[in-house]
Image 1 (spheres, rainbow, N blue to C red):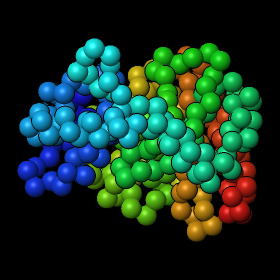
Image 2: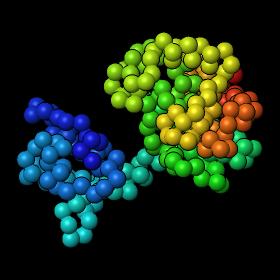
Image 3: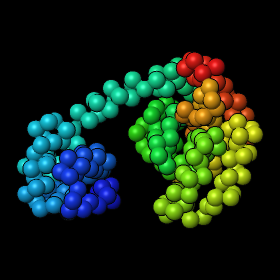
Image 4: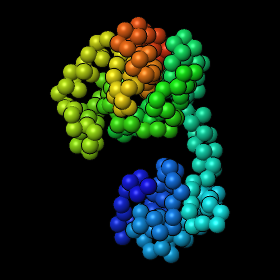
Amino acid sequence: MASTVKSSNELEPGPARILRLLEGLARSDQPAKLAEIADWLQVPKSNAHRMVQMLLKAGFASQEPGTDRYVSALKLYELGMLIANRHPLKRAAGSHLLELQRATEETVALVVLEGTDILYVERLSSLIPIRATLQAGWRVPAVFTAAGQALLAFHSDAPAIVEQILREEPRASGLDAASLSQRFETIRGCGYAMTRSGWNAGVNSVAAPILSRRGSPAGAVALIGPTERMDDDFMRQNAKLVMNTCLRISETLGYL
């Protein structure tokens, strides 16, 4: 869990530490001990205890009975769902994503660009699951996935985003900016992106951007599946369905 909370400094305001604690608990797959929390936040254990108690009182965290381990509470999920369900892109995309999922019988995802990552805001799963289970709320560095590349190909700040990912993401060591720039040019020409084992081994995807009136990407739709079902022929054959889905979402949003 320590890796999910960036290190702080002694001058960091208390509210900032509490927000980092809130995010850290939400992203952790394991309950966190009080000593671990103090270590993440670089504060005395007594200070960490006070911050945890504030989250407990507000309903944002819960304590495992009989232990000093803490987890995030479902109140975060409740608030997150309220925000997500109000998102205009998700509201506009719902029925169109369902049509695509029914037509292809593969997993369909709606993503947006958040900083250097793509954020999955919606997912409709295939009846035949893929090996790496995709979840709404996941983040992935944008350059690795078809959806991220489809977004970056039409994004004005793509060079800076790519540079930051290549500098900070260890798994990007085999990539280079020039090759990615050429790939983005190809994506702009054909209107869609394809990746093979982009972020997860054995999982392929084809994606297209949802473009605003100005041609900037508001989000992307991805079709995702295992390599044995989603080979290059399948992805090319279904790319038009993905692009048409994006066009219908743009029309629903009033972009066309």
